[in-house]
Image 1 (cartoon, chains in turn red, orange):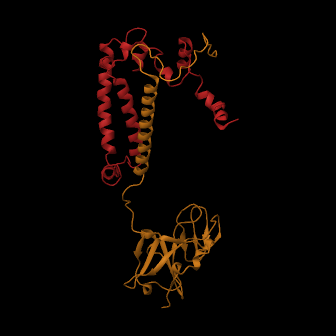
Image 2 (cartoon, rainbow over the protein chains, first blue to last red; image 1 turned 180 degrees about the vertical axis):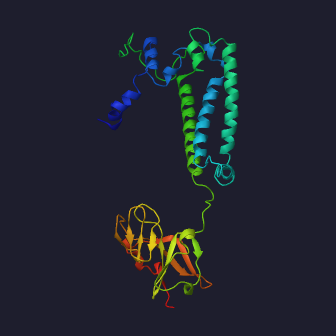
Image 3 (tube, each protein chain N blue to C red; image 1 turned 30 degrees about the vertical axis):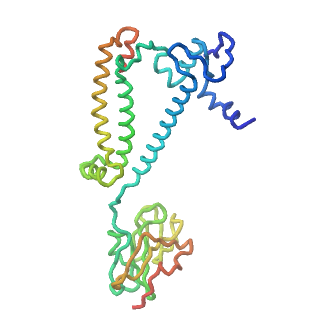
Length: 142
Length: 186
């Protein structure tokens, strides 16, 4: 058996890529529902519902900023000591001594931007009625 | 979860650019765009990984220099373990009849700082009881190997200069290296 075949026939591969590319709506729905990433969003969305002028993409931007915050935050934690004795000097060293001294600023601006984008997201959800019944749980999670 | 059931037999794949649905895009164009997107994403991810790796090495470490002078050989008594630099530089300076050597104060067991017991003529580690002779040789307790020695030499002005970035381990036969021992007969 070729190497490629032995990989694609393995348990691990088949648990990640569970379906081929089905061409009928029922199987397509199944493929989306059984995927750990894809099943978080609805299977089908109206084309008119994904316009940026409708969604503003604020949810996506918020999620992106959250990822930025997590990564920059973890990186900053390697150098920052949250004690009275060290905090001030560690922040100065993060700017002057550590490479990519802009990491702290990225973290800070990301935080501000995230708060603003969350606010805009809530505003958009309200203005488009995306919280109404059948989508109450989505709104609650948000 | 029931396995997928195909409603109709698969249509044979059309070669070349397939006829798109109304308002669609040729298959080749679509795949080119997807490939470009993934290539850009991969490149960006690799760049970010490289940046994160660079981030882990600060441009300056606020540590004391590894090379330093410790005075003239005459300031050290023969046959005495000198502890004047133990707190500041973590070394013991021992002068014998033939010369001078410098021991590291890091216990070779798990890194604690041993104490020099003048009465028992040995170094004794308070953590787990490792014992070392004045030469640095381990003889009791859990220490697996002797204390390490550092490079000693003469600086231009005649003072002894210690370089902690070069260490010598007895079990590797390195104590016979001329840099590990400073010959001086006062």
